[in-house]
Image 1 (cartoon, rainbow, N blue to C red):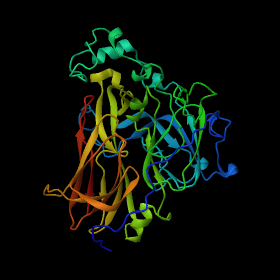
Image 2: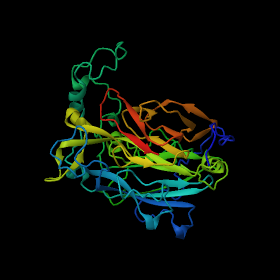
Image 3: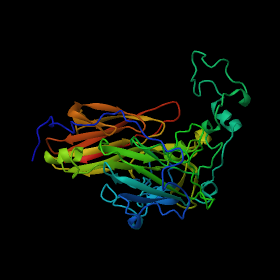
Image 4: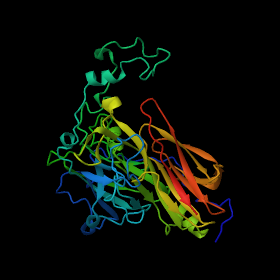
Length: 436
């Protein structure tokens, strides 16, 4: 069935964005450290339960045969580029079903796709298996003095053009550092992890005990080298009237978060499904839209000087090296993937900007390089009353968009990604191709 735009009412009864979130000063019951904590599962009759492991893995980058732009030119033709990296994977036998066709994170750097429904109790067991990751990846924790070497040159960057912060620092001791967590790796190993469920209207879950709103509480920090803190159980309830749509989860231990997010330590989180009333999936299905694609745009940073000997497997980069790393932009677990769709078919794209230090401008070109309009019906999990036509959109770090595309004639169409470069780094653009 070919649809006529604009679409009818899309999730028009979205709940209010204002919500009072209850805190738990003594911790959410059932949450906490310890590998003996089973954290849900069939025996506990949890509504939704997942086991997620943080580990070091090697993955091939799809569509990277013969190398990628900016990479060393000694990669043999036909040989893909691979990454040796920190990553999250799901444990199927200890988890509820994964979304995105059952994607569990074991075939690429992006973490597993989690799904929940409004009103459900969710339990997630995080296990850190990244023993000696810093040593294996040839990394080290930094210091204020080392960070000073990155920022001491005028204009690298100039974040204070009007002199708001007073005289320009001349020594490391002159730097304004109110929190060591502002210096990457100063107070934590890059192997330490936690989780943040981005956009969900749930109890606080970054600090210990989970649920506290105490501003001085310590970070939840799951470590591989300590048996007591190697595992952590997250417990939270999705409000019964929670907005349904596309969310995501990611690493969020300050002092290492950007470093780890550069390695794809993120994953989609879908609230609602095609069978849940009021969800965009349910509303779209009523109008004949039954196909969706999860598309995450992210920055992959690598150290071109360090790779597994005799291979095209690169170690992840370290931003304290400044000019010694290179960065390219991947779509999901590959470089510029291609999808096929029918003429007149409408596809729902769950677009996630998982970039850490840059944003993206998104637009679509046909074979004659003419811009092709598309439709957006939701932003950051909140649906509009009606889809809105665009020729381009801007997305920043963490932003999600519900996008609808439909092409009237056969051909090759390119979803273009224009990198919005900030003061930290440039890179190679990604993107997606659709063929009808």
